[in-house]
Image (cartoon, one colour):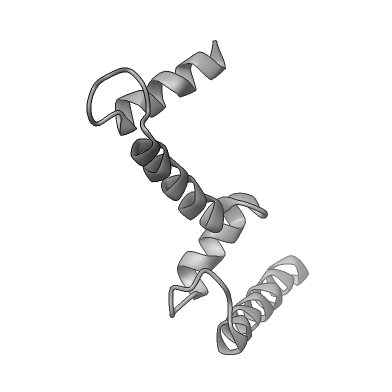
Length: 88
């Protein structure tokens, strides 16, 4: 049932000519969207996507040196503030 629901959702979204099947062009559009999402949420799930949205300033779906440094500073400051709260 779950697979059937996904298939129906794909057809609703990408079957532009309404023939009940995905043409090669329609499948390509579905694959492109999937790969974009995977770039944001794959391999690390939602956390990776959130990190990229916040720190990937050039939009290449990777963290360069300056972007990693910015992330590290954020994590360090967050860690310090969490530690301060626990000590009190």
